[in-house]
Length: 607
Image 1 (tube, rainbow, N blue to C red):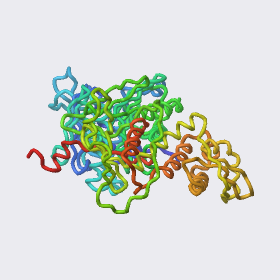
Image 2: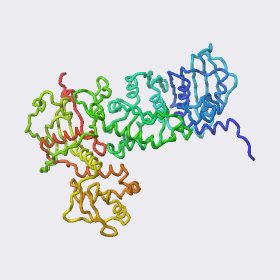
Image 3: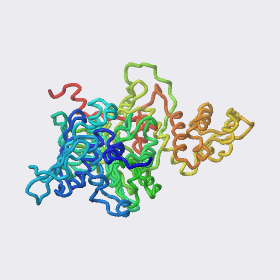
C-alpha cells in the first residue's frame, strides 16, 4: 500500500541531510544571514550548541507575511528557474534549511525589516505552533534561537559527541565562514563566555589581523600572499611556507566563489605544488580563494555543498598548481630589511607585506629559478669525531667578514661561515645575527635543483663503470625498466637486459655509487601506488621528482664530514642561488636565523 508520508516525518527525513550536528545548523543559519546582507553576526552557543544555537544579524530581515513561508519546505527567495539553480551564487536558499531544523528542535524566529515599526515572531517545537506571526520588539535584522536539538529524535541525540567536541566543530564552522567574509563582523559566545569578537576587516591590515586571530600568529608570520588571474579565473589568498607544514590537514581553507569546499581536485593540485618541498606525511597550510564564473562550477553535487564539480577541471588544476608552485620558487630574502621579497621574472624584487611590528620576519626563502647554478667545490675530508663537543673553528679569514667587505658590495643574505658544529651544522654570521645551516639538507636541495635543470636541458651526465653490475628484479619489473631505458639514461643510468629477471648497469650518475643506483632502481618499481606512473615516468613529474630527490639525498654530504671555511661559504652562496633552498627535498628547513636581539635576550643583555 503506497501512501504519502506526513509532512513532519518528511521534514525529519530531510533534516538528516542538513542537520548532522550543531555545527551544521550554525553553518546554515549564518549563511542565511550573509545572504540577507548582514554586516554583523553574533553567535551564542550553550552546551556545544545542543542546548542553544542563537544567531543574531543586522540583515534585511523577513517581512511579516513571509515568516511562515520561510519555514516551509522548498521555499526560497533566490531560485525561480533552472537557470538560477545551475548558476547559483548565493550560499543557500533562504528558508530551505529552516523547516528541517524546526522539525528536530524548538525554534524561535524573530525578524524586522527597516520600514517596519517592530518585529514579528513565529515559533514551534517540531512544527509551527501557529501560522500567524505575533508582534515582537526587535532591532532591524533577524534572530533565530534553536533550542534542545534532537529533542524529539532521541536516537540521533545519542550519536552526538561531548560538549567540547561539538563546540569545536561549531567554532570551526564559524571560522571558515569568517575567513570568507572579511567585510562582516562576527562574535562568538559559549556558555555565556565571550570566545572572540572579530570586527569587519575592510583593509589589508585588518584582513591580516583576522588571519592571525583564526589561523594563529605562527601562520601569519610564515605565510606569503598570492594573487594570480588566468583564463577568467582569479586565485588569491595566503600560502603557508613549507616550514609551516602540518601533521594534519587542519589548516586548509579553500573557497570557490566565497563558499568553503573540500574537493579532491584542488586538494591534489595544491599538494602537488608542495611535492618537492614537503614531507610526504605532512600537509600544506593555506587560505585561498578561487573566483570564477558560477556557471562553470556545480555546487549542488553534495547535500551540504562541501564538494563541487568544475566544468573545466584541467584549467582549475593548472591554475592552482602553477600559481602556488611558481610562488614558492620565487620567494627570496632581503637581508638588509625585515621582510622577504618575491623575485620577478625580469630580475627586480617585489616586497611582500612587512611582518607586524614586534614580530620576527619570515624565515624561509628561495631564489628565482632562472639563475644558473654553480657546483659547490666539496672536497673529501677525514670525518669529524663523533660527538665532538666543540665547534670546529677554521680561522683562515677574519671572524668579522663584514669588516673586510668593500663598501657598496652586495650583502650575502646568508652571511659568511664562522665554524662547523658537530660536523652537522654550519654557523654563519650575517647582519641580522647568527645563521645556522644543516649542511646535508642544504646540499641535498642544491644538488636536487641542479639535477632538475640538467634534466630539463637534456639529461644528466653518465659515468661508465669499469665492470658492469647486475641487478636482480622480478620479470615484470625488469620489463618495465627495459622498456624505459631511454628515460633512465636521462638520469645518467645506462642499463641492458641480460636475463629474464636481471638488468646490467653499465653507467651511473657521477654523484652516485653502484650500490646507491641499485637501491634507486629497485625503488622505482617497488611502490605499488606508483606502478602506473612508473610505466610513464618519463612524463610523470611526481615520479621524476622522486627519482631526483633520492639521487640528491644519497649524494649529499653526510654528517660528521669536516668542511673548510671556503667549502662552507661555497655552499652558502649556492643556497642563495638555488630555488627552494629554504627546505630540503623532504620538507625539513635547511637554515634558521637567530637575530642579535634574540641572542641578547638569551644572555639578558641590556637588563
